[in-house]
Length: 120
Image (cartoon, rainbow, N blue to C red; front, side, top):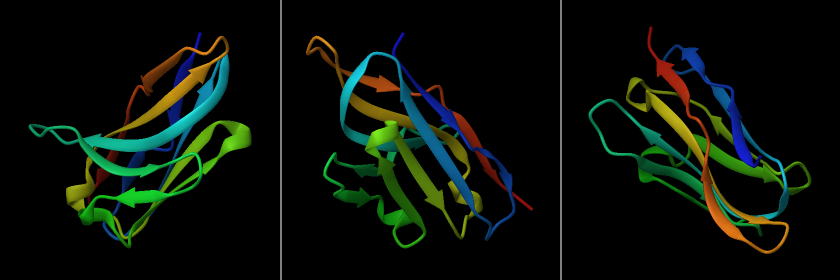
């Protein structure tokens, strides 16, 4: 069973920090691009940050300078360090990854989502 397992969400005050993790588990040969998306109530899912297998990154304008995406290829894990959090960052955060499975099959996977709430 191949899946992406997320952790690290929660409730934090404005200005605080959280670190999200997403680990790929199962019969995974390698992982290409990985990323984090978020969806707030009543809004469309949007890209927050992405990272290639080589470490190149891109960010949504709304999080530049506050969020940092990184990955540990040996652990099949991607992280999102979120600093200076704002109430408008409140959303369900989803991990996304392009996986290459043993046998050569390629497929996009999504994590189950983790709630991030920024409120005083």
